[in-house]
Image (cartoon, rainbow, N blue to C red; front, side, top):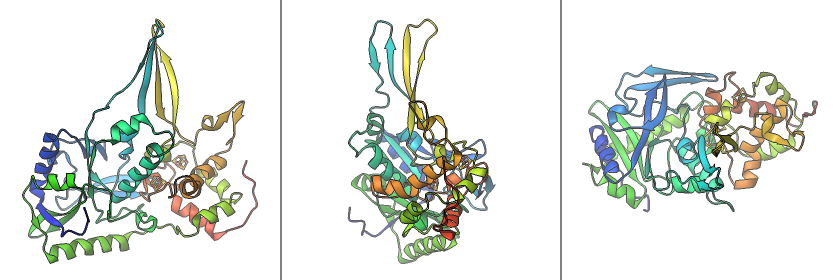
Length: 378
Ligand code: SF4
Ligand code: SF4
């Protein structure tokens, strides 16, 4: 698709039609829903499962849902879940070994068709990053490859940024430019609730043709672009990405790493909620009769001491070294490895850090005292 076609318009009441069509095509439909006081991602069967009229209020170390005064379907920002949990799940059984020596490799979900509804622009970039790391390298991950091969991406632009978002400065939002099958912008007007729709692929074109739609008029196109411009303006946090890699490399011994470490609990929450952190470890378990053993893969975090354990001890013993490693990887060494930063500016690590450590502020502090070396990180 050229992406230059005039956008379309569907009424919000026809959103259910999109879901039904996806299900008819064999997709399991995943999307946002409210559970335990948060917007999470799970199977959604109809628009009624979406967080209708729900927004959120976020800050460093804080997250609350709020009731909106409208019936927006996508009026929240992002919650603790990301699409990583479906493409690169928290736990995966790799294989089972029985006492007769037979090894059964696990091929779960090999034929699963998944549709992701409400993918934010920053999350599209996070998926592109995971593709690069887990699919396009020398050793593609078969679990990721099987899950990624038939995913329908229905993106929704962000017309209301959260307190912790900084996607505009990372160049990943608030408007999706590519990488989607369909991209919606939610329009809430006195004359009706609708979605402006951009078609990204033939799959998207086929889907939109299954529900009533028309070409968007000039006013609707202008409204969507005004909402996105406003969203960009209202985004309070930012990271100066130009020169950031060199700034960080110059400041490996900056005193601020130790200052962050005084607050950091090394809990690893930031890596669990991050849509791009991909590290895993493996563990084995046997049954009580020693008849069979299983090998499981699970998410790991570079904030644990064990993570860097090699022949006799961890190489990143202090929290200071572990925080530095994480931030350096996100913003500097990832660029060397994969060509882009490993951060998409979603703000989750700020919201879900129990002590409110804020990656944008920590980078700012390093920039303020660029080149100052007083404390050696061990
Ligand atoms: S580092 Fe933080 S802001 Fe960046 S992508 Fe990960 S969770 Fe989002
Ligand atoms: S930065 Fe925050 S979320 Fe991350 S390990 Fe430290 S305390 Fe936990």
